[in-house]
Length: 201
Ligand code: SF4
Image (cartoon, rainbow, N blue to C red; front, side, top):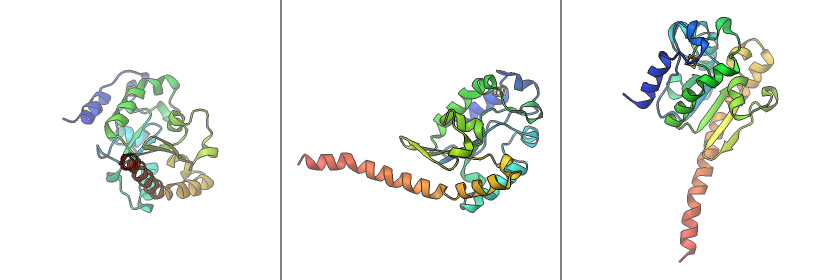
């Protein structure tokens, strides 16, 4: 069994926070273990809790539509949430719940090594853009080393807000260019030591 599969098994029996008490299924995440792109949402909703799979309700269908706009399918990306168990009544996850669940997300990122981390909604955005307002920074990437962090609106919120919906659709279209830019930067940087070596002769 892979380390990621083992981690998902640990999530399924986790009781580290109160959200374990109301769940039908924990929802660890889904996607390839070497995905280039990871989407991080907020927490499972009703359908996700029933099925144990992230983003399967209306928001999930919409996310699939968004992916199709950039020629991607669900199978191409890894999808997870900041909390792996459904908050009752779909309330916001509490800080102590996010904190309790944080090691699982940290470990998923460490094992998958995504090149692009897309935060969906304000709870996952806070991990990388603390104190920021999503309406101000959505669609503005931040590169740290070889990883790009990219904040977008949550599809569930955008479904009910036509303005956010159009912004979300604009933002997703920038993803292919972000990855291409990262390729270019990595290529340029990989040439620097070579250039230095050559200058020695
Ligand atoms: S939300 Fe995370 S920390 Fe809380 S019980 Fe579920 S898996 Fe464990």
